[in-house]
Image (tube, rainbow, N blue to C red):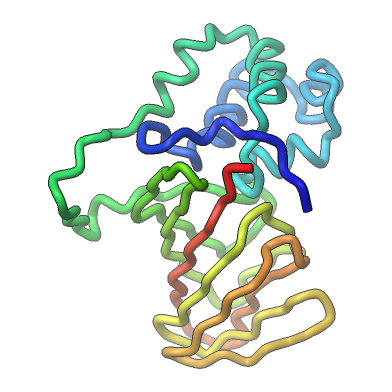
Length: 201
């Protein structure tokens, strides 16, 4: 699968904020997703994936969206800026994990961003996903490879038509372009560590 060059540049952007920022500006302008997509000359499904953080847009696509939102590009990128000083280690207290939304229509999916890092070959994002009992979401695709570690289970992971039963300590690595969704069939909250690997090209 060939991917176009993206906005990912090593070290200075918080990538998961791109979709969140677009969604916030769109709602502020009282635009429907389908209307913004039409104005930017892109598909509504593509815009939805961008807003949900499951795809990082190419530079032309990002500029087209931001242009239609009538937001100064410098102002938009200022929101995405992240610290670029690396002292050789990073200590991340739990209370600094940043909650974020991937799918607005999902129920019981609580995401927390732990760490993001850009590299010349792409970027990765480490998140904690807390899955409430009865959590619901349709299968989705992500333009990234995903590594999932079950901090406490059990969990059923649906990959296309396959259902994998995972317990505490189990791991799963897969191509996010496969339709997928974790399902919590227990009566307790389960927690997953999820690492997304985004390619630069």
